[in-house]
Amino acid sequence: MSSADGCTFCSIIDDRDGVETLLESESYLCILDAYPVNEGHALVIPKTHVRYLEDVCDTQMFEFLQKALAKVNAIYEPDATTIGVNNGTDAGQTIPTSTGTLSRDTKGT
Ligand SMILES: [Zn+2]
Image (cartoon, rainbow, N blue to C red; front, side):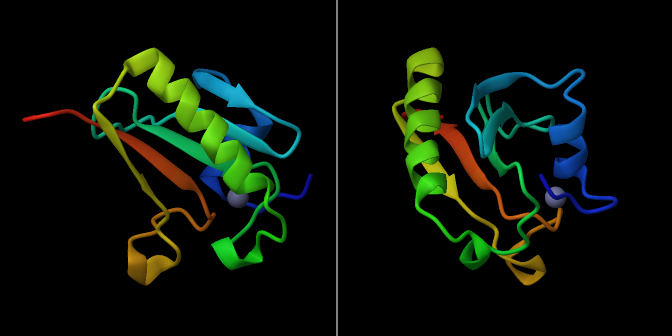
């Protein structure tokens, strides 16, 4: 696996101490966000450092995202979910790795 020096997500891939893993495959990891916006806020992280979503050259990320969503739904039973990708610094990407974000939405909250 390739990683980038100083990348928080690459560090998590290498050392998961204190990280709650929800799902893992050969290429991706789904963890609970350390700074959740709500209960069940999860991140899908490529195990290989990828700066932009367009640099992911396969469909596995979407397939893994669907499985991760099913896992989040089974555990947290949200009324709905928000799925997003901050694709670049100007789009709110604070860590330079393309990640999928799953956040839980509930009626009236
Ligand atoms: Zn990285």
